[in-house]
Structures are given as structure tokens and as C-alpha cells.
Amino acid sequence: MRFPKTIRHHKSEVVIYGKRPAYPFYRISWKSGGKRQMRSLGTYSEALAEAEKKVRELSAGDQTLSLTAKEASDALAIRDALDTFRKRTGQSISPIQAVTGYLEAARKLAGRSLDGVVDTYLSTLAVVRTKDLGEAVEDFLALRAPKAQATEGKRSVLNPKYVANVESWLRQFANAFKGHKLEDLSKDFLNRYFKAFDELSAKSRNDRRITLRLFFKWCVRNDYLPVTHRLNEADAMVMEAKEDGVIDFYRPGELRKLLNGSSGSMRAVIAIQALAGLRLEEVLRLDWSDVFKVEGHIEISSAKSKTRSRRLAEICPSLAAWLEPHKGSTGKVASQWETPNGYVQAFTALREKLKIPSRKNGLRHGFVTFHYAQHQNENMTAALAGHSPTMLHGHYRGLATKDDAEKWFESKPSLSDLEQAAVTHGKKRAKADEQR
View (cartoon, rainbow, N blue to C red):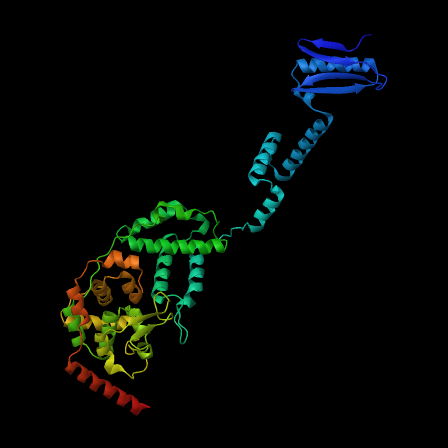
């Protein structure tokens, strides 16, 4: 018999090779999947039977014939592994899903171990806990409440008024969805909630948005919301551009009336706001030692500044004249008012008595407006007022003339004012000495 011998079936064929002195076996060879496959057998009859079987399988399109023995063994192992996975998890995954999914993950990981990345992810994965919305709000507020309380000699971490506003807004939010869990919240909930505030200003709505974002962030840290909650992506949570409010300020003649019509601490507070540019809250935190400690300047320490940054406010000649009777004073500049509201009520009564219209933050706005008009230097004015130059340039430019500015900063007390202030201050000091 001559070798090689070809066995054909339709268009398929398998070749039988005979024994050789160096290789005492018959071999059959065929092509499948573009690869040449080969198998050895001991006798010719075995080789012929296997060749006839293979050629018919090839003709029928059996692709498993392209697998090597190891590849076939691996395929069976994969089948068993997927079957075990199905029994343990209840999930059925096909071999092609397993392979393509792994390869895509390996491509994205760029050489990093898939097991290692999964272990790292699982170690940082938080289990979200069910929490009633109202309870979460109260827990959040309870943590913040102590920060609004000032300790002796120190200012509170958070402004009490701001903390009170946050409490009001969050409790209102919780009541709007009473009985709901945090996990119930959705973007649709937030869109409906903000419909009730259409009449408010953009700033007021933005304040509520900032508060909710703060609350949601705390919920994520405490595993009450998943980090992927997306509530902040609700249409109603998009921050709005704020309308620019009109800057209003007292005129030089009105400042003169306010100073002449007041006395004592009231006059000092008005003068410091109008002629040194301090915010009302900053003035009410001042001690007289802050006013006279640094020659020619009022020191606003970080503990008393709104921005919590120390700065020095220049004492101009007019302000120095108004403050002269108070040299040697001790204690708070505005000791007679326990709260800002107390001062505001007293100032309102004075303003109405003098028939001067209300101008929100009009004294400080007056200082910034007239100082900028006088010096035309936004950096200098901003540094004194504790503003940013950009904000000052955008809001105060061109509001007053240099002549108006000179009138504002020339609001000095008359001789009779000084004499009366000195007498009043002397009586107060004598009374304090008697009490000591």
C-alpha cells in the first residue's frame, strides 16, 4: 500500500501517513479552522476508521475538530466552571460572555490584575443603610448646633443666624416628604419641592440648594445615600445666576444728620461703619482695645472678621475726631446692645426720627463707594473693606463723584459735639470708678 493515502467525502479530505523507521505509528492529518491537525494511531485499521470518521465530521462542518487535545480539555474545564458558577449564584453566563467580558476588562486595566482591582473596589464599597428622612435631618442638625455656640473669649464656628436658617430649610424639606426614607428621594421629588419657591429670589433658592447639597454630602459620608445618588443633577438643583442688587448708600448730608443726632456707643458704631468701612457684625464684636491698640488703625482680628482674616482699617481724621472722647474706654464698643437686632432696632428708631430713608447696609456701602470714588484704586479700597477687588470693581464703580467723597470724609464733629461727648464720657467714667 502506498502512502500518503487520501480519504475524501464530498469536498473534505483526511490524509493517512504510513509508518517510518524513526516513527512506528500511522498518522492522520486534516485541516480545520485554518489549522492543520494531526493524530497518531497504532494500526492501519485504526487510522483508516478514524480518518473516515473525521472526513465525514469535516464535511458536516464540525468546528471542534480544529481544537487540539489541550484546547478541547480547556473548553470542557470552562464549561464545568460556568456550571459551578451558575449553581452558586443563580446566574447563567455563556462562555463567549465570560471570555469577551474578561478581555474587555483586561484591556481597560492596562496590565493591572483584575482580582486586585476588584478587591480594592470591594474594600471601599459602602453598604447603604435605610434611614428615615426626618431622622437624618435631625441627626445632621444636632451635629451642627454646637458650632453655633460661642465659647468664652471665642467666636462661634458657624454664624448662629446661618445655622438657624439651615435648620428651618431642612425641617421644611423633611416635612414636605414626611414618612419617606432617604432611599425614596428622586430628582422628581426635588423638582416638585422647588416649585413652592418660585416667588423667592434666585439667591434664596440658591441658598436652599447649597443647604441640600451639604445635607446630601453628609448622608453619603454616613452611608445613608449611595455616592452615585445623582440627586444633585435634578433640574431644580441647578444653581441660578443671581440678580445684581442695587447698591444703595447714605448721602453725606444724611451721615451728618445720623452722627449729630446720635451719641455715645450709637455714634461710635455709626462712625466706624461709615468712615472705616467695617461691617455691622464686625463693629459689634469690637472692644475699645481693638480701636486704640494700633496707632491710626482699628484692628479687626481673625476672630472678629467676617472673612476670619485679620486686617487693619485706617482711622481717617474725621473718624479720629469722633472717637477722641472714647479714648481710655474699656469693654465692648457696643456694650448696650446684647444682640445685633437690638442695635438695628435702635438705629431704625433714630433714622425714622431724623426722617432718613432706609438704605440696606447704607453706611458700609457709603464708605466703599466714596473711598473708591476718592482714590480710584480698587485694590486699596478692597483691602480696607475686606472685599475682593473684582467684586468692588463690578458693584461700586462710578456710583459717586470725588466731590461727594470729600464731603463724606469731612463729616467731622463740631466743637459743641466734642464738648458734649467729653462731658458724657466723663460722667460715665466717674460712675464706673465709683462702682469699682
